[in-house]
Image (cartoon, rainbow over all chains, first blue to last red; front, side, top):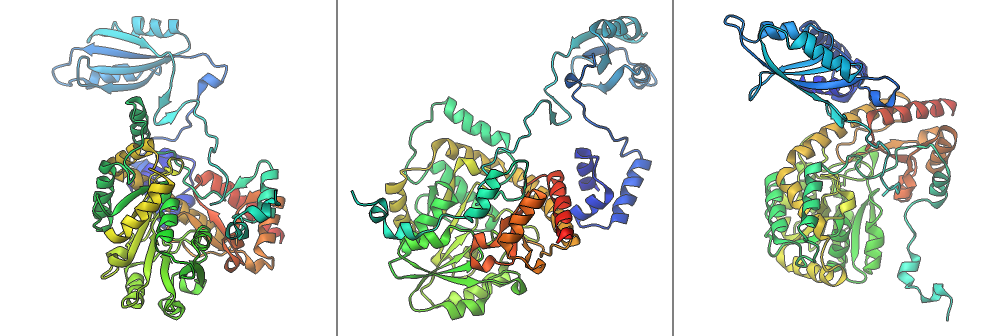
Length: 159
Length: 388
């Protein structure tokens, strides 16, 4: 199963037929497994990786360290939920170390992100403090290098 | 001065440059070709290995190493061969680090072949053996392997080919271009033929890490064979290090010291930067091998299925990263087929005759390419085949 998941994690475009051929399995079995993974929430979605810097879209990404007071009964989960429900929040992780939650926010402008932190995030009851770091440039994301050269540099002799 | 042709060595001037000039000239003249011709990995050398090379430069390690290569590298090679293939070679006397597997092959042949000695070469195979044997004054004896035999070397054919002049048997498995391998049973059968003769073996195991059924078995691990085997291998295919030009040759001490002399006088030592990188590859690169091998394996299944389903029949290669496809059934000589495929569909594959006359009817198709690249080529090939 993990081999199939690795394959589609790497290239969600692959069809079940292609995967079956590559792994020497039956197409039906591959389809069944993928459907089960989708149903069980092992596969949560399929999406493209886009280098927005190559478009005219304006956007701004920030990495925010959040310290919070955990709640007696529900630990960090409730406050995490309060935070991740905002569509501006792209990612949210519970961390070990000097702060509790790492949050990646995306907005149109720096001002918009700053406003979100000041107006929505910081005032939350259990949030003790936030530290906002703006992303200046994305070099690599989810294993993909942005702006990498994909040219075939091999000498073309056949031997 | 006399005309150049009279000044050039007669042996060398008789050698043909590799390839089929007409086809490769045409290929060079065309743009936007989807190529499946390249005989080297598409992976870049894993980063940690590149870093080891970079760091060696930063530390100023820019001198010759000892002629036979860094002792630390020879020790790594020795451990690696034991770990992966159960072989035992002494780092101080049985291993020479060479400029790629190519130098390993050349120096091995030159070390043992006397003028007039016969060298048995199973064909089709990599294009270098025959010219190297000729340069050494040897007589190549080509032994054709066939599709019926899965392009394995037949023990009976081998027995029939051995004469009192036979000095060396070259075993190029896993094979470029056919993708054939020799498993333990195959090797045992060959060993039965060789045992009791004075025939030496040059085993070119450059593709040893790229087998897809089971682990590669070295002929040197078969009973009684180590004493007569020269093992040539290298880093190019296993670690995607073609441009680093690094290989090695292992042989019993008495043979090794003769190979060493050729290497010492002709080469001095293999590139120092590459040697440092190679230590890192051997010590921490097993998972890189596995990652690349599984990727080739998936592509292999994909391209074999694709080619067969569009009517370009081929067996399933068990090693290396080539498919040896039957193009003869379309009624065209393989060079013509490949020329038209290139011209009409913009796809380049290597005509079988580039690997000698016995390659007629076949073409070598490399799958050292991404699946999407292979897919694109398959679609174009399909259109072409339908038009025939």
